[in-house]
Length: 228
Image (cartoon, rainbow, N blue to C red; front, side, top):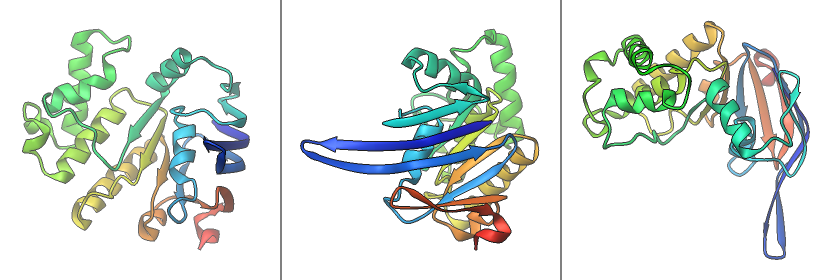
């Protein structure tokens, strides 16, 4: 599904250049559940941003389903993200002025679905995540776990093939965190390719494969049973 070939990302501040990722090679197959781990500052979130086409590499090639996206325009990349990639972040990134239903519908606003079909899709995904009774509420009226479920609903409303999660339980207590992890596992079991950044060894153990980074390089890339 995704192939990164010698991907590097460098940041420059004045005369100082830092390397966030250093010649990373990575293949992700459709339907995989990949956990990206490593200490703070090792390049995890940078890699996730590149995978999600939110950032561009300084060098190397990005192939999505065999198609080289490295030289695509920002408009083209935005269109690809909209149709194929969903995002779940540690901070929920919900718009408090909008209702739960409207927050979820944001993911469908610039797609091809007519308004009636959008509302039906929103109702379906809220029902699935146990949030139908909260559709008219605002995010500030919800618990942290409920807000993260709304964020997941928004991420999957367009039925993306790839779901990227950056510390999705980082702002949740353990009970709500386990609930979110169960939802992500269900989505992966249904065929969604899932890539998750996490500091939690327990949550990483739920994935089928672990990528461990250190200083912007891949230290370990192995199926779960070999990654410990």
